[in-house]
Length: 137
Image (tube, rainbow, N blue to C red):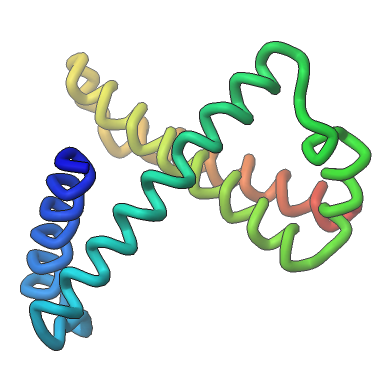
């Protein structure tokens, strides 16, 4: 419980900093801030272990029936699920491209414009390919 409250305090601090820095985000009071921090902590404490267990089961070759190919393929027919899946794939590719760009710079590759263009073009192509294939389902 102590660890949970500590994480909630860090979340509250992060939310407060975001409210000070980002225009359009405001906190009405300490109660709102504490409630939002506790909610974020609760979601993090609940979702993270579930995802770890599901990933472990899938990696060991024993995914639950709900994560079987037929069920996921059926879910992929819904536009909302397609949109979410395209977002996850796209954000992952763009994040990977950015991390590779920074890594290349840290390793001494100073042709940043070329590296950025190649990596972000690959992320764009991958995102486009994912959207194309999702629309074909």
